[in-house]
Length: 133
Image: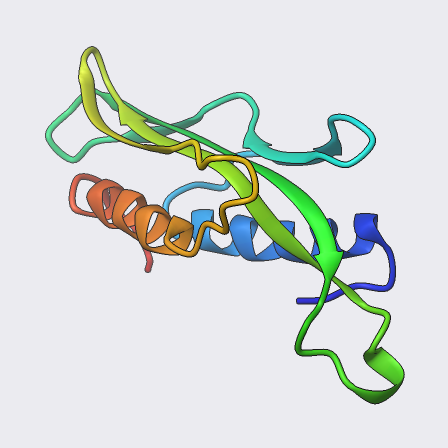
């Protein structure tokens, strides 16, 4: 969802991130400005999940973003900004690494597949825990 400022665009995007994670955890999601043009959204601390079969899983999810002009904005919204993913890392771990979905695109490369990786992570977690989703 676009915003009027870089912070608003990132905060709006963070809401989607939080909503997606809410299917498996009520864990804390933090969005902050990492440098002049970069923002980070992360689970801090990693979200702890209890497996049906016993034991725990941890979701470690991080996205690095920047705010860019929204190319689809029209009329009075022409000056709005949207979040653009620069890098992401989603991991579902226990004692050993179960799944790691990581991408570090080359500078200037637009990442379009982060959402598929994020949904895959959530689905992996849902298969192993009791959830209301």
